Image (cartoon, rainbow, N blue to C red; front, side, top):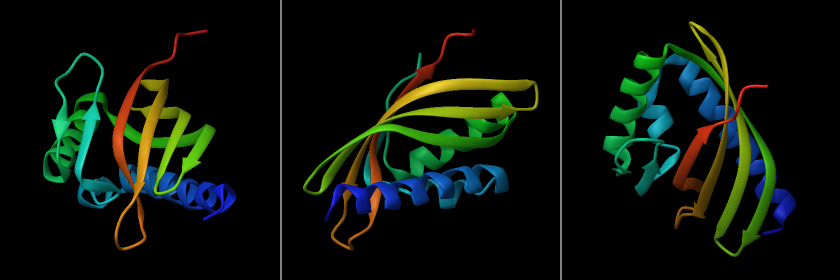
Length: 127
């Protein structure tokens, strides 16, 4: 699979991520991750597995007042069934806006779907 094709797939998955947040559909959000995915949220323990990831996003979104997310790929490296994405996230919160930077390791599953496998992020400095 060419990196341009993978980029289009990841761009679409990132749009689906934002749409799931906007709908508060955390099951759909978690379905974008592999079954054995891991989140590495800032200042928090590692979150392992799709079910725990669903619970994490539900709690985090409620706590932050997260209403929308726009993910933008800055760099993407594809190597076989793995892709490494560096990106920026624009977050819409009930209290205003926030920006974050992230690194996601994507994995193409046996069903051919690309899913988030490892996900780590932290805040961008205020400008």
